[in-house]
Image 1: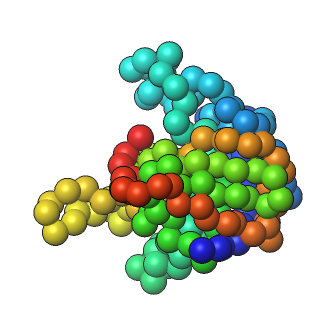
Image 2: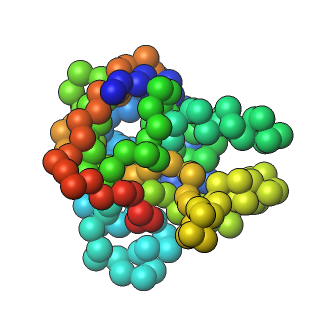
Length: 180
């Protein structure tokens, strides 16, 4: 399985959307250099309030661009980096990958998927009604989160639009991604 990086972004402050960049640098064990969410311990405000010492399993946020295509068909205008992701890909269904999947981004960087992003109410402030499109229910009535995946950086390196994304699945049995 392979895909392509189509956009990279970062922001040194905790804002909803991130600023697109010509390249980002991933730092092993930390996240995106210069991003407000980089660090060994959790940086997301709600998680810091709950327990500032918990490990940062949300160092890098990735979304597949096919989500934006689907949202456009439903009347929403969402561009890469609008939902705060650091890396936007095309050609991979990130949500279907198991926990522990490794993604090689470009020539050096490697991230490992830790879970799903849980969309928050800020999404409706960005575009009313969008939250409902990003949180659904499966046939068993369980929530389905569509706002991307979270990862930790295993190996640092520069990531640019146009870089390939190579998938390495973890050993079986596979665990599905859950909210982190």
